[in-house]
Length: 406
Ligand code: ASP
Ligand code: MG
Image (cartoon, rainbow, N blue to C red):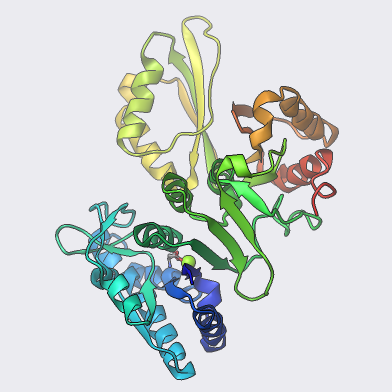
């Protein structure tokens, strides 16, 4: 007997038929003598629809009220799934974040989980009930409802798995697992059997869109084995786990991120402390700056370029405006027509040739590189958006990622 946390995303519970499909999966696990805690997301596009509804009323609604509204999506799902399990005839109870005691900080719309208080879930499991809980939502110290940021239900699942000491945390989604590239771009992309937390973190933040970033961070911190798998097909998924038990491939995957913008501050005064001041102001506004490039000074001036997620472009613009006196740039250029394409692999740390091979693939495909950044386990390039998919395909082929796997 094991304790298993199963999380089902929005597409997996999109309609009545899918909810029964999920209910059957859950019951199957329960009938194999396991304790099961299920975490659900809002059905289909519910969260987006709720956001649209709010906009009709007040496009500048407070984040607190947005959280009250958005949390209802998950609440619907948990009740509907519990009803389906009741109908199949197994004992079940649905619980909101409030009932579970899932406490977060007060950063509305993007809260972090602090801890789970009380033992309501365990008490229900002790009664041999299947527990269905709402993902994405939490409660702060003011007893207000919070949400964890888009895609946050994955993180709810990992938090619960960690609090309960679960044996496995399964993330059911609409894909079979983690692939060497997005199969919609690269048809011969191959599914990975396993991947390390660090590689997955890079892929998640690089736009692979399989798991919520913070869920992987938390799984790594508490050493929770995650399995990403399909709710629609019965097939083994991809296990995300500790690096030492993972095959160290040079390159594990190629990711593309279209949701970024490049900012160039042209003709900034070339004095010590400029970069510090600019990026400190952006950090204060919680802007996530990624690739940074500074030109060599000439005539007492230099250029500083960097990328930010599209979602933070407005905040970036505002911060730069407010500090335009200090920055003193001759001119600021914002380019949203860019993509970041990256390779990730724990084995590249000690292999200097990897970046060159990637650049060669781009050269062969006639694709120009705007910016480059590297870390121990990844190389990213910024290129013009129209070439992003070609770039992914070219790099995937160059590293023979289609052939090497089973
Ligand atoms: N329903 C929320 C969203 O769409 C949370 C989630 O799906 O994980 O972002
Ligand atoms: Mg969702």
